[in-house]
Image 1 (cartoon, helix red, strand yellow):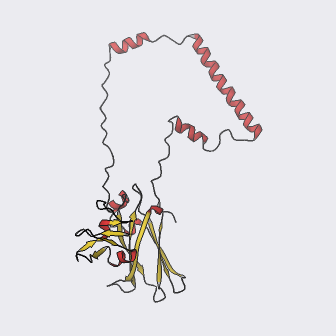
Image 2 (cartoon, rainbow, N blue to C red; image 1 turned 90 degrees about the horizontal axis):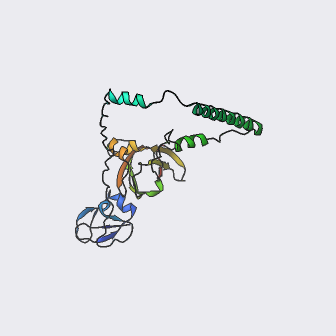
Image 3 (cartoon, rainbow, N blue to C red; image 1 turned 90 degrees about the vertical axis):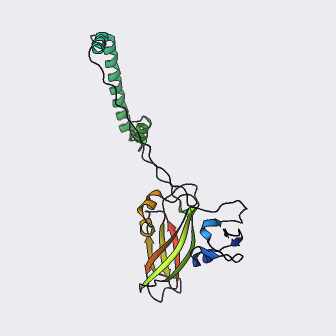
Length: 254
């Protein structure tokens, strides 16, 4: 991982521990300027014109739709002419053909039911009738699930310290970066406190609405190549807690 100084354009190697120690801020050893590493972050040694990660654009959702009222029909000549063109009744041969069609459909239905009962098999496989109705446009298909893949979200840093003003409370800070090429929901974050032997002392799972600053960000989701530093508050289990683990999970899946 690398960052580039915004003042003198010097490229510096970077680790997650260094990034977390300064909460993303650093001082350039060449020009002594203070910058934000997250504004110019690279996975590999960058080219001279290469840009680092940055928050994505805010999308615009929804297109207004205007429906024009239909022109009212004028009674009179049109109604009388339409009535004049309609025949008095269907021809006899069409009525007879329709009767035969209905009888054929009923007979085919009876034969199908009897055959299914004889073979002890259902007439329709589960879900097949629903698929046919969706193809005919008689039923709306279920909405597609939003894209979500926590494997494409990087978790950087992770530093725990005592709360400066609240005894018995720990503060845990880290940063997540969306490496996917599209928006996706913010993940759940699971924190596990460990003892000296690596055993679990306490575990808590934080949903996105517990660590995000506002509901608008939760509704929009993570934009491509965007990053989010966060801070979690935990109850201090005492001196037995000597380590911790951070894990990302799909939102809403326990």
